[in-house]
Image (tube, rainbow, N blue to C red):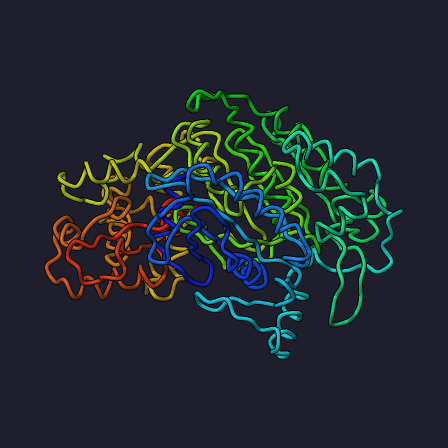
Length: 558
């Protein structure tokens, strides 16, 4: 985490998932109430060294080590937090002072602080210890939410592969030699990491699905999840069959290591100097991709996880319990844990960072590995990740695009800047301009008619044969596109770079501001294809419109 990310959190202000705490030279006792309330609700971020109004007061110089030690000791003590939580504080050197960041994940268990149970509402930690209905609802919600926490009462310690415990300790030791799990027995490690739990509604207790997945023998895992499978495949040289294939039905530790080895076998290394440190970009990117695959998978699904390497991209399709449907905007998404106890172990291994880091780090390092490439993340059932291995954008066709839409030459610099940031599907390769039009028109029509708010004409030509019968179809889009389509595509094209309403009206030679807003901007915003840069002041003349990730996918035919 860096200063910019801290500033983004501060700008959002305190709320359901954000809390500020001043902490000059000691940990405020109220921190632990917030830790518990976040873990019992939807998770959240605590910034130590920040006042309630968002002012960075900072940690007192020299007090960082003591605060870190106190936090870790308290969070791992049942006397403070029960069951204990493993949270690693993150130090961020802010311009105005040192800030400690605590990323608290939503837990599959109900936690208390000093015997009191807290829940988060708005920006308040509520003590619900005496409210039996609230506590009952909380236990019910926890039991149903995370499938990884399902208890298997007849799962015994003998069903685990004992060699995996030493392998886990060695991985943890290499990452952090003072980790508390290194000092306890195998069974205590499972209890401390919430892989053994008690359901206080049913009185059932035992090892969980997460315990079986991390430490189980292969026969144990297959008995519990007979359909569970991970497939890694390569199709580059031979398009009729797989060049290489790896099938995994084993524990998550070995699965992670073997998937990383498969990636290293088939994708090239590339090094980058970050400050004075030489880093392996391939490792940085696919450590996150594979970590996310394992940490966020819905393991009760009968679908397999598929990792497919082609000449154009790496595509990962992962069974998922979606929180919403559609592409993720890496600049503004709110991460949400899917398997917090599995993530807890992978964080201890150093294989994942704080929640949400996977998408942010992939977006950060991929353009260095593949120049200007942008990853695509689509939250759906299943979750889909696309890592382009080559980069082609609409910017490669900016001049043809401007002429085809008959936009004024004055709009070309604006279009060149925006379209250069709008990636085409990497599978298109070195597509020609004419073939690009033949590819895009059917996609616009197919998606447009499903978005009822756009009210696009269903009579729009989209068949290749009929397109080619239109005069100058590849040179003059006004002849090919019906009026409604032309305006919608023109607005999306101009919004690839933030643009004011006044600028759009000028570029499109449109006179009636109200009609334009009602017919085109409003439906594009309703369908989530564009957004305002300052939605809190919609009438501000300096407000701009910008295309969303969903809008980019629409415009480029993804």
